[in-house]
View 1 (spheres, rainbow, N blue to C red):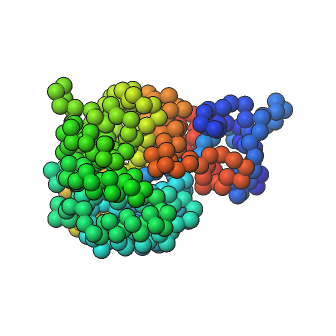
View 2: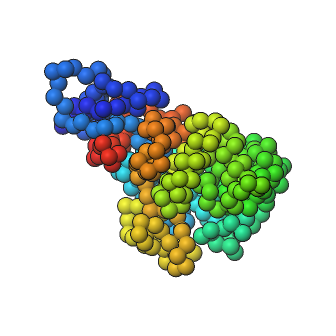
View 3: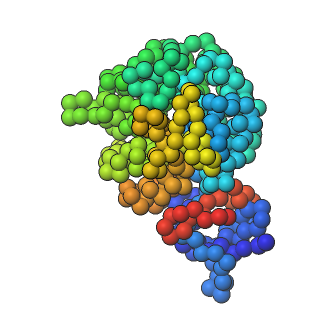
Length: 365
């Protein structure tokens, strides 16, 4: 069925544009063109934009990557999120056994070229136990042959990969070796000082994982990881759910960056998105409570939000301009991975589009 969609704004070529209409059918976007005064649209959303890119997704639709490291598991996570406005997904494997990392790498290679699959994020196990969060302490270890082999396989297959590590626990020469493979190295779950963080940046760290979380907080005399990250030109992922970071602190970090466009949204979503309201991780029950995911001790354990929700929060709660927020949801993540951001063009499929109403809530396409 053909539809004429007349958004207030279209995010096209990196900026918000008005006065355009989209001709759409069951397969997706047929064309974008100037609107004619005589036309009566079928739908008038506030925004038409490319679907989001999420570089940190632990699970969706009742499936955790750590529990199902198969290609089918990855496909299920990706397809679930594509129905919720996230067009490109980087499934994330958190700290686990060497064999599971290798299995996830092989599954990711099998998924190369699949619609919506953006690569693999390996978060841990080479992190600082003092900042492990919900990661299993017994699996935390130095960089080993299994991780290097998994990274090598992924890059030889030209699969994008992000590795989260604690730079103070990994020798600089090892960081350089991994970066030289073409792996995007992100500092996270780290207790690094400002000096250790700068050394990591010099060695090849180009990103920070869920800013503020899993790291010491900055103070007037000790900027630590947070202050160093904000003052750097590296990319920073951030979870904007109101639980992981307060609206005020998210806004401070956003406005303080010296390099604009280097902040990107991540969901840190777990299997409760599009699935049941609880799951097990490392044998522990994790459940949704007042919009947050918590373990038995009441500590945060991932997030119960999708990228469209983060985008809405960023504008409505944090006060970031709409064009900057959209950039953080569908351009900066690709930039962080040295990839071209998918845009809007004739023939763009439905699952690669996101429509938002005037309250920035996702509309079905």
